[in-house]
Amino acid sequence: MTTATPASPLTPTLDPHALARTLSGKHLIGGALVPAASGRTFDVVNPARGDVVGQAAFGEAADVEAAVAAAAKAQKEWARRPARERGRLVADCGRALQAHVEELARLITLETGKALRTESRVEAGVLSDSFVFYGGLAPELKGETVPFSPTVMTITQREPIGIVGAIIPWNVPLLLMALKIAPALVAGNAVIVKSAEEAPLAVLRVCQIINQILPPGLFNMLSGFGPDCGAPLVAHPKVGKITFTGSVETGRIVYRTAAEKLIPVTLELGGKSPMIVLADADLDKAVAGAITGMRFTRQGQSCTAASRIFVHRSIHDDFVARLKAKVDAMVMGDPLDEKTDIGTIVSPQQFEKVQGYIAAGKAEGGTAHTCSALPTAEALSPGLFVQPVIFTGLTNDSRLAREEIFGPVTCVIVFDDYEEAITQANDTEYGLAATIWTNDLKKALDATQRLEAGLVQVNQNLVVQPNISYGGVKTSGLGKEASLEAMLEHFTHKKTIMINMA
Ligand code: NAI
Ligand code: MG
Image 1 (cartoon, protein in one colour):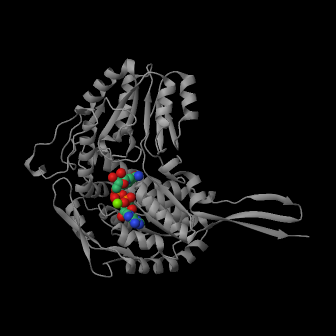
Image 2 (spheres, rainbow, N blue to C red; image 1 turned 60 degrees about the horizontal axis):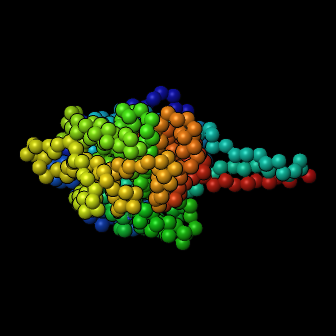
Image 3 (cartoon, rainbow, N blue to C red; image 1 turned 180 degrees about the vertical axis):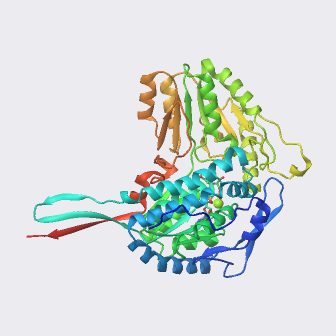
C-alpha cells in the first residue's frame, strides 16, 4: 500500500528550451524513452518565433507494434491488481504531476504558442487534478445484481477492455490526454497515446513523469503524423478501443477502421456552439461569458468555442461595443510573457485556414471588427499572431456560421424573437455545447430542454471539468469524456455472470 505522497523523482526543468532538447526524438515504449524504429524524426516549431525547438520521433507501424507488445504484457498483471491499488497509483501520478505544473506549462507554451498565464498553467493544473480525481473513483468500478430468479444469482462485473489507443489533438493536449488515460488506466487497461504532430513534447514529459510510478509498458506514448502513426494504431488487431479528439473528418476515418474491427470508439469532434443572449440578460456577464466561451485566450482554438453569438436586436449594438472593448484590452504578445493574454495560432496551416475564414466573412458581406493589437517586438515578427475578429452582419447561413474555424473569429448574429433564436441555434450539423443568457426563468428552462447539445449552460460558460460529463451529439461526436460515467461506459466491458444455485 502506498502511504506517502511520492515526490517526483525527476527535477522540474523551468527552461522549456532545455527541456525540449532533452526530450527530443523519443517515444516512450515499454518504460523506456526510445527513438523511432526507423530513426526518423520531425521538427517541433515554436509558433511565436518560428524557430525549431526540438525534434519528435517519427512514429510508424513498427513503433505501434512495439508499443502494443509492451502494453499487452503489462496489462494482464495490472488488471489483476485490486482496483483501489490501481487508483492509488494513478492518483500518485497526479500528485507527482503537481510538482511539474510550471515546467509543463512552459513547455506546452513553447510548442503551441498558447499564453502561459491565461492558458497553459491552467491546463497543466487540471491535468494533475484529473489523475487525482480518477484515482479516487477506482472503488466505483462496481457491477450490479439482477433480480432474475431466487435460484439463479445474476450479477454484472466491469472488466477492462485491454489495450486502449488514445489519439489527441494539439489545442489542449495535456488536459485531453488526462481525460483519456486516467480513467482508462484506473479501469485496468493499458494505454498507447498518439500525440499530435504540433505538440509532442509536453505530452512526452507527462509520460516520462508518470512512468516513474506506473509499471513499465502499461503506458506508452508515440509521436507522429496521423496517417503514418495514428492509422496503424487504430488498425492494430490488439487495440480494443480508440478514444479520439480532433476533426470530424479524421473522426470519420477512425470510426470506419474501428467499424471493420468492431471495436468501441469515443469521438470528441468539432463544434459550432451557440450562445443566445436575450434582451433582459446581464450584459456585462454575457460579454465576459462570450470571451471565456470563445476561448479568445486560446486564439479560439477550441471545439466548444462560442462561435455563433445570437444577440437580441435591442441590445445588439451595445453588446458588440462592449465585447469589442474587452477584447481590445487583451494583450497579444510573447506567449511566455506573464503580461500576455493571447498568444499565437499553433501552425502555419491553421494560420492560413483562419485567415481564409476572415477573408470569406468579409466576402460574404460581414463587417469585421478587428480587436487587440499585434505585438511589435522584432523577435516576434515570424509569430503566427491573428488579431481576434468579431463579425456582425452575417446570417446563420453564412460559411462562417456553419463551419468550424478554430481561430479567434466569432459571429454575432442578430435576432428578434426567442423562437427564431432557438431554431437557428439548432440549425447546425454540430451539437457540442450551448449557452443561454437571461433572467427569465421560463425561457432559460425551456432553452435547456430544447437546445441540441451535449452540454447546455445558463448564465455561465464554464470550461471542461473532470467530474462533469462532456461530449457532443450530431456530428460533434460519440460518447462522453470526464466523469465517472465516462470511465464506466467507455473504458470497461460489462460481463454478466449467472450462477444456478438450484
Ligand atoms: P486532426 O483531426 O487531423 O488531428 C487530430 C489527431 O488525429 C492528431 O493526433 C492527428 O495526428 C491524428 N490523426 C490525423 N489523421 C489520422 C488518421 N488517419 N488516423 C488516426 N489518427 C489521425 O486535426 P488537425 O489536422 O490537427 O486539425 C484540423 C482541424 O480539425 C482544425 O482546424 C480544427 O477545425 C479541427 N480540430 C478539432 C479539435 C477538437 O478539439 N475537436 C482538435 C484539433 C483540431
Ligand atoms: Mg489533420
